[in-house]
Amino acid sequence: MAEKQVTVIIPNYNGLAFMGVCMDALANQTFRDFEILVVDNGSTDGSAEWLRQQGIPSIFLPENTGFSGAVNAGIRAAKTPYVLLLNNDTEAAPDFIGELYAAVSRSKRIFAVSSKMIQMYHRELMDDAGDMYSLMGWAYQRGVGRSSRGYNRPMEVFSACAGAAIYRRSVFDEIGLFDEMHFAYLEDIDVCWRAKLYGYHVRYCPKAVVYHVGSGTSGSKYNPFKVRLAARNNVYLNYKNMPLPQLLVNLPMIAAGIAVKYAFFRKIGFGREFLEGVGEGLSTVKRCRKVTPSSRWAANCLAVQWELIAGTWIYVYEFSMRQFKKMCK
Image 1 (cartoon, helix red, strand yellow):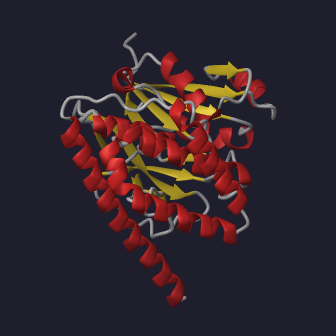
Image 2 (image 1 turned 90 degrees about the vertical axis):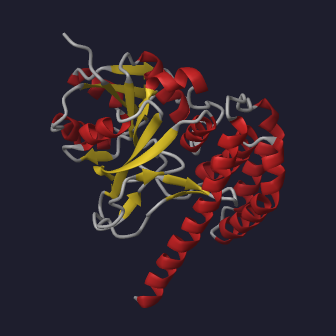
């Protein structure tokens, strides 16, 4: 029997309530050249028992290793040319896998392709049209909260959202896997940034549609755990991927971004957790492995810098449009 082309890797931590919808959608895919691999992260809600009963190929980890640890276990086990990472709180449209596969296989220089993620319970609204990064050190979901009737143009994005994206598996051998120091949050930005520094591209495919609950594992958009880890990982992200000259140039904007974020999180009751995360990041950042220079290193860094500038303007535009929409209500 011919080998499959894609392994769909689903990290799961106490996500039993979502698994039925997710698996039913995968069963209805028009593209069939894929296999499923669930990586259970030490769940205690009956997920492991359910997966065994259903006969779904799975890896059962004894404890929660975070998103990075789970997907790395899946990538190491996969034998296919491509791996598709998919959150358990999703419902994929029938052409989802086929469209992602067609997009990523167009060029060997494409590392990852991000899908059109739409809010599960508000299908008129976008959840994510590829992730972006700004000069202020802010990662954000392009299109979040805007009309899902838009964002229909394929384009280069800074990062694929690992909640529903396909990756060329061979590139991981060159640039490394997801950084397990991150545990969770911003690890997808990090791995795509690394790929860009090696000259690879990250694309957005609007025809690959998936509906996403959002925060299905962490339980809320903001919570102490998420705020602390994201703040810490933001420090790692800039240190690892920016050479010193670039870091020094961007430092004033990054510092301003930290100040604005602190003011925001203090206002909603998470100021202490945010500062703890930044402090932990600064105290442990030397443990991170900086990206090893590749050929065309300077040119690739300049290309990334341009993307950071563009990402800043896109953020300002989309933020302004959301505020304008609120004012008009």
